[in-house]
Each structure stands twice: as C-alpha cells, then as structure tokens.
Amino acid sequence: MGSYRKNVRIQLLLFVAFLLLGLNILAGYYLEPIASWYAYIPLGIVLVLIIWGVLIFRSKDTKIIEMSQQEFKRLRTSLYAYFVVYVIDIVLESSATVDQLLLSIVVTVILSAISIYGIVLHLNLLKRG
Picture (cartoon, rainbow, N blue to C red):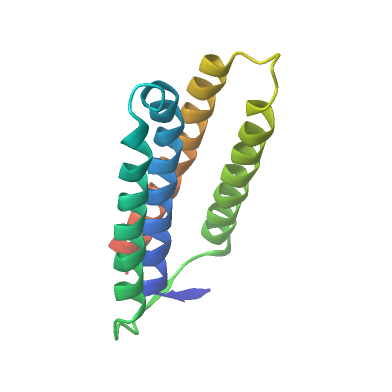
C-alpha cells in the first residue's frame, strides 16, 4: 500500500497538533483561571500548523511512500484511540463526581502517549521514503 509523502507529512503535523491539544488539557486546567488570554496561544499554534499543512498539501511532491498493511492499521488504530480518549474526556469533564485534576493528568498522559506513538510511526515512514 502506498501514500504520497506529502500526505504522510500532513498526518505528521496532525499528530503534532494532537500532542499540543493533549498537553493543552493540563495546561488549560492550571492557566485558564489565572490568565484569560491563555486560550489564544494554542489557537495561534493551530493556525500556524494549518497554514503549514496547506503549504505542504499544495507542494508538487509526488513521491510515494510504501507502507505495510500492519503499519496502516497501527496508524488507523492510533487515530481511533485518540478520538475515543478525547471524547471520554469531554464527557467526564461535565461530571461533578470526577476529580478534574486527576482526569486532566490521566487524559494528558494518554493523549500525549498516543500522539508520540503516531509521530514516531510517521517519522519512520518518512525516513524510509
């Protein structure tokens, strides 16, 4: 199975954004009460990543990177795992019975680990291609 190198690079940026989003959960728990302007920092970073992704997408890179079915399944599984954990976090945030600090720490660790795993998978694909 093959994929354009520029698509793999865009997916790498997506996992970097996921890492920042995961870290933002814990940072937001501590910083939002004392710094109301904090929300603009992650927004600015995401905008930069979007612009960078559009520039990569518009590039003329037509090189194809071959990946095995197993690698494809790992990438897909990591995306689904991230989605499931993030949705669970959104649902549990509204629950008054859950310790929010503990939830933030656990979710940040899990989301960061999934993101780092995705980043490593993509870097290995790019190194080969």
